Length: 298
Image 1: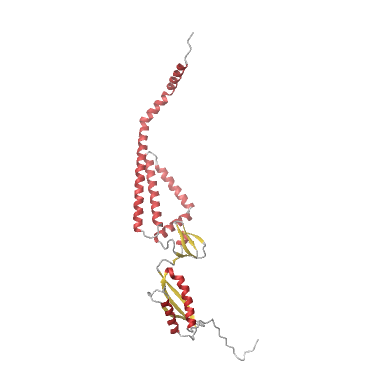
Image 2 (image 1 turned 30 degrees about the horizontal axis):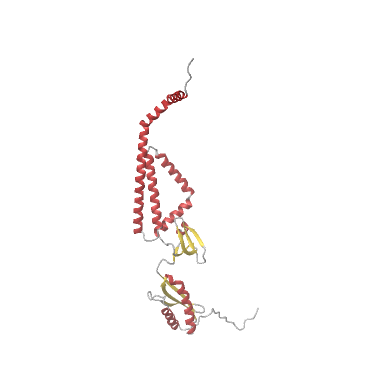
C-alpha cells in the first residue's frame, strides 16, 4: 500500500507542473525580448529623451519669437500672440510625428489622413476660416486697437475686445456688439481716436443783413478764449455757401482728440451766446411769396 502524499509535496508538484506547462511561453517571451523587445525598449527610451529635449527647444524658440515680436511689434499684442501660438502648435506637431516615426510607426498614412481631414474641416468651417484670415490681416495692419472709438460699417463704438475671430464694440448707449472679423475687414474702417488731434467743424448760418467781417472777428475771439483750441494748425473761418435765407459760414479749429466732444459742445454754445450779444442774427428759414394782381380765384 502506497504512502499518502503530504501537502507540501503536492504544492511542489503543482508548481513544477505549472512551470513545465508554461516553459514554452516563458522561453518565447525571453527570446522576443532579446530579439525585438530590447530594440523597442531602446527606441522608447530614446523617444522619451527626444520628447524632453524637443520640449525645451520648442520653449526656447517660442520665447525667442515672443521677445523678437515684443521688440519689433509695439502695437497691439494680438498678432504676436497668434504667431507664438501657431509656431508652438506647429513645432509640437512636427516633434510628435518625428517621435512616432522613430519608434517605427509609419506616419505617411497618418499625414495623408490628416490632410484629407483638414480639407473636410476646411469646407465645413469656411466661415470660421474666413474670420481667422481676416483676423490675421487686422492683427498685421492694426487699423485699430482695444480702447479706440471706431466706425465699422454701420456700427460705432469703443473697441472693448479683439481676437482672431471677432471684434467687440461698446456703443455710446452702452450696447455691446460682436462683429465677425470678415465683416470688419470687408468694409470701411473709421478710427476716430487713431490720431492725437481732430478738427472741429461748426456750420452756422447768419442773416444777409449781418456783417460777415464782424462775425469772423467774434468767432476768432471765441476760439482764442477756449483753452482747448490749438494754435497750430490755426483756426479757419470762411463762407461756404449762400443759402436761401442765410449766409452759411464754417468755423474750423483743431483740438486734442480726447477733448473733441466737450470742446465741440462748448464752442457751439459760446458761438450762439457771442453772436446774440453782438447782434449777429442766426435766421430762421424764410420763404417769400409774391401775389400777382388780377389773378382770379378758381
